[in-house]
Amino acid sequence: MSPLSKNNLQQLFYHVLFWVLYITSEYAVNLPHLDGVEHRNMIRAILLSLPLLLLPAYFLIGYAIPKVLRKNRMFLFIVIIIAIGVVILFGRVQWLETVNYLNSGRMYEMPIGKVLKNVIRDYSVIGLIVCIHIITDWRQQRIINEKLVQEKQSLNVELLKKQLHPHFLFNTLNNIYSLSLKKSDKTTEGILKLSHLLEYLVYQTGEKEVPFNQEIQLVSNYIALEKLRYDKHLQLDLQVDTFSETIKTAPLLLLPFVENCFKHGGKNEEGVFWITISIRSFENGIHFFVKNSKSVKSKKKAHTGIGLQNIKKRLNLLYKEQYSLTIEDNAYFYETRLSLNLTNENL
Image (tube, rainbow, N blue to C red):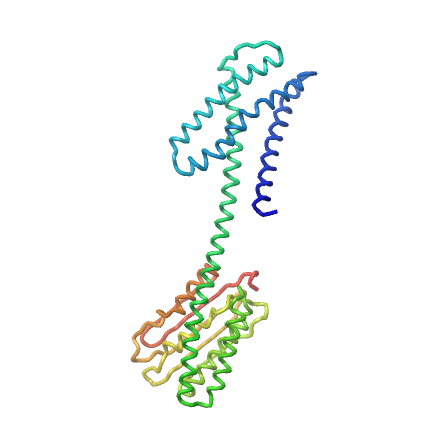
């Protein structure tokens, strides 16, 4: 059985249950005043009145609300409500005359004034089932909207990661290409490091979360690959805490920041290219700090790259108010501070 047919059967069950409860309550209210054959007459009277409630209620649910009210045709909707009231009034008059005839065998005219209170009660019952329908429909629509938002966020994250991969690989292959031009013996080591990076990209980044230690290892492998190119021209200070194996984060959170250091960093006025990286832990969270020198000849802002734009979007999608990101970019250095609070679900 399809989910749609299950949902239809469930709705049918609730509608039948509502009217069964209505019939039962109507009979229970009048029970103290009934005697003998009057019990059968009351049940018959209640059943005969059902069409006066069923037809207007399901006309409102099936047509007036979806086709008129939802299209903001308020004047027509009000006219429909008034028309339904008139139909119920005269329908109730005819119904009472019919019930009296069946009970007494005589036909006499029913004054409209005596019927008005019954019309108000009928409208209350119709209004109740319409309200239940609107609330149920609103809840279902809310669930659908939440699923659509989640699917959109997941799709955005996947698209952002797909944008990031070519960007990262392009820079990494350039590094190895530089080594090959120099006929360096470190080219083989560089290819090996790249294979580890590719393995991570292929098998790990498809996951929603990965152990944070794997993220640290990814950064270490990338730094090792960059060090092959810069050799002694790079001063690197890397400080990393020991993290529990249970701590998990979204993949590729830190790498774009580190990659940005090598892409936009350079020798300062003293002729030194330096990078400082710190990955620290605190209660239920991670603090990441990276800072690099900038070339005196470079005036380009370091935060304009595709990788950093993507990581900011991913942080907003995945962690919303659970993180803080501050970036300082001036003529002498580039600095990034990321604090990420992880809930118990992430640990």
